[in-house]
Amino acid sequence: FFSTHATPVDAAMLEKYVASILASYIGKYVKNLNKDKLRISIWNGDVCVRNLELKSNALDSLRLPVSVHQGFFGCLKLTIPWNRLQSEPVVLEIDQVLLVIRPKKSEAWDEEEEQRYEHEHKQHQLDLFEVAREARQQNGPDAADAGAGEAGGYYGTGFFNRLRDVILNNIQVKINSVHARYEDPDEGASFALGVMFENLSCVSTDLQWNPTFLTESQGAFIHKLLSLQKFSVYVSRHPKSQLMSEQADLSPEAWKERMLELMQSETERQLLTPSDASMKVRYQVGGQLDLSSPRVAVDALLNQLE
Image 1 (cartoon, rainbow, N blue to C red):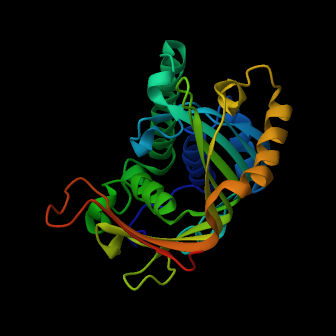
Image 2: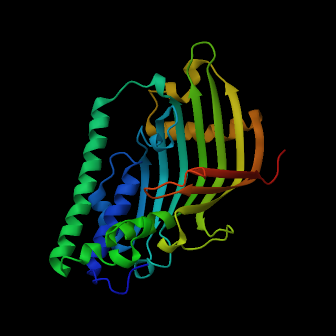
């Protein structure tokens, strides 16, 4: 995806930039992530981080009226094909996701958290700017804009912008063992809506929904195929005091154990018994949208419904 006329960028500089992208990508969702240690792990090609806590605003990009009350990842693994970034995807694998969300109306405004989020965003932009500045100094003024003339397209005008978009548009996600629970703590009518699944995979595809590696020449639409295995849904009513979002006295480990126990006990209240499902998602990218097509289109299919 790089122009043959592009100025070569030092390999160490390339790795530094990719590490910054991925550290920022993960840091948007994870609380108290040590990005410096994560970058070092990424450079070494060996990333495995355990017991991560989700940020309260981790779901904000979905633009839903909910926020994360508490949530944890058991393990996060990252595989980076350093020598084949232009032909193979980065693979992000997450094991054991336990999550409780609540309506935003029940969450107090956390000014300190918002300020921290803004600071992290600005720091990320400065980090990327610094990498581009170093590239110009080491490889000449065209390094950060390598190949912009012939291969600009909707990915942007710079080498690093195109690299960032190609990596993020092709990132392959695998999530195993998930229990996500929505709780409404309304007095007298408290209930929980839970979703569980054994694993989820998300890959980029071509127009015929065949897994492929996307390049900047494939237009302004991205196609993703999501596959779910043993997907189930339950609804249950509880006294407010028994909701997971009301268990402030539980330690993180005790909270996780309780969420795992609920994965077994709530099966008696299932609206949807474990089924396989797939989703075809098409969304537009870039600055100019095609107003004749929806920005996001989703086609979902339950393979078996009981």
